[in-house]
Amino acid sequence: MARSVRIGLVGDVMLGRNVDRRATTRDPEAVWGDLLDRLRSLDGLLVNLECCLSTRGEKWSETYRPFHFRASPDWATEALAAAGVDFACLANNHLMDYGEVALRDTLETLDEAGIAHAGAGETMREAARPAVFEVGDLTVAAVAFTDNIPEYAAGPSSPGVARVEADLSDRESRETVTRALDAARESDPALLVASVHLGPNMVAEPDPERRAFAQWLAESGVDVVHGHSAHVFQGVEVYDGRTILHDAGDFVDDYAVDEDFRNDRSFLFEMEVTPDGRPLELRLVPIQIADCAVHRPDDRCVEWCCETMRERSEPFGSAEAFERDGRELVLDLAD
Image (tube, rainbow, N blue to C red; front, side, top):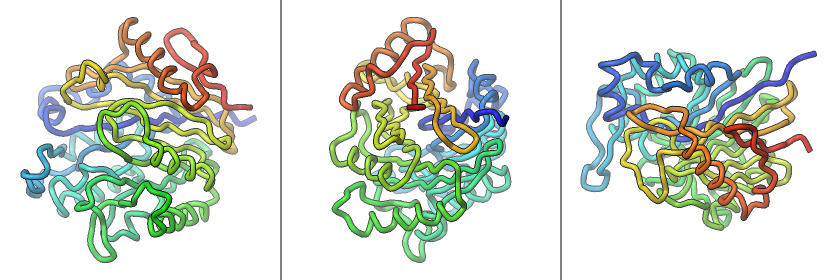
């Protein structure tokens, strides 16, 4: 009998700035800290790549964009490969930080490394194109979209990211996403993922508009909504039998820590599915970011993460469904 498949999903992986500088003094694998073996034990890993992979290009307007993130392709792809990253979402507000040449470098670098990606391209049609990849014997299709930074949006004949409005009243955006999902289904995937970078920073819950958008994705047949953008984790919702990670928070970065929101704390989200893509459970492994790397947290941080996740999942009716398994939270998805 074929065994079940374990797929990891994490939030922002930002390998630029101080993380990039630290890479010159340590092994590229060091960004994964003492979580590396856990990541390697997974059958697949999906991330939001919150930077471009390039040493070229000029900063986008510093007047309007105070933060610009890029990493050297050589060490960054070695690090991504070391953790077993299979898919990178590129639809976010930092891929175009160094312009079109850096976008093209990122696409080429990921292609050469054999890492599937979606959410950016030479045109909007290309940016919205789904990625199809294998996780074990499982075929996964993923689409990627963002509602951030209109200036970074791809156009009919210009490069950029796959930008839409996370607003169900916006007909053009709904049609764009629907076409992408239809294209993804052509590969007959066992699992369909929407990796979406939606909403503002430092908010602990999705606004009604973006929650409705995520639910619409589930109603449209998306098995897993992989949300990120807020820099802090939000609640988990099981809607129409589908799993919505409203925001996975951060996973690797060099950001200043907000002592209230604790953007340095989140989870590795592990989903176990049957060989035909039927979800069995979602396991949440607490993590903490420090010294430009991700780590297993101390007991106090574990308790904070688990209790806070329950609190933030309360509005979605899933708080009581979480069970503790040692230092981890488990949500049964088999029902």
